[in-house]
Amino acid sequence: MLVDSHCHLDIMDKQYSLEAVAAYVEQAKANDVAYMQCVSINMQDFPKILDIANRFDNVFASVGVHPNDRIEPEVTQEELVKCAADENVIAIGETGLDYFRSSGDLEWQRERFRTHIAAAREAKKPLIIHIRDAYDDAIKVMEQENAADIGGVVHCFTGNVEDAKQVIDLNFHIGISGIVTFNSAADIKEVAATIPEHRLLIETDSPFLAPVPHRGKPNVPAYVRYVAQYIAQLRDEPLEKVAAYTTNNFFNLFPAKR
Ligand SMILES: [Zn+2]
Ligand SMILES: [Zn+2]
Image (cartoon, rainbow, N blue to C red; front, top):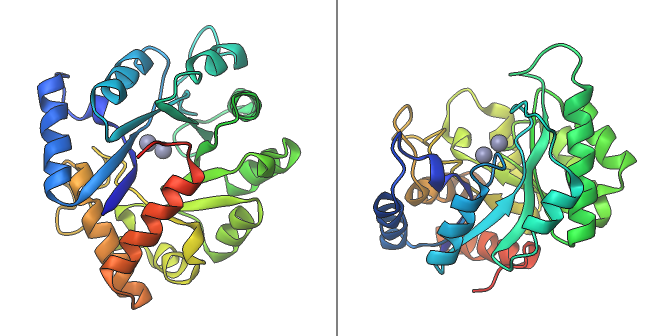
């Protein structure tokens, strides 16, 4: 059994439909992907994500605003905590810092990140953190806000072994996506091969970042299988073992009901 710890079922197609979501969930099941975490990126679409999680037993939701989406008014701690009250909402995020796609003075990103950490603390739900080209600052904010008390995952990890060590020392898990299968991803391969197994989660980030052999095409939760297979090869472990500990890690970290 596999878990896709990070996907976006609500933005898979240009035209959203529940029938299409049901088909992705069925396709995942047929590939032994028994559970999926559908991650929120803005507040407008949160009701849709919660609706998906309520309809499908094997899909969970989160609530949060992606670091790149500028919004007016800014999301509040109160709003996040209120949305997180539903038992199908198992995490706060995705939140974090992304200096790749935003420029200028990014204090607003750091402020929003702090708001999410405070909300996670109040809601008692772990964080899903997105970091791109901003590891030093993200670690700084996580330290300042004592995010280690809350824990969570740094998803779609793209740092090096030293970054991974800092993330793990801060009580966070590492989410490995399909990028690990790309030829250019030497650092991520090294991270995936060497981190302790109890800190490893796997994800697709569907519809983005399809793993080899589907690179460049739309990604689906079923493809988390390729991520698991690749990691099993890297670590010289049977696929069943990687599947078992990444699934256990997911359910130990998040308050998700099987
Ligand atoms: Zn992300
Ligand atoms: Zn995402």
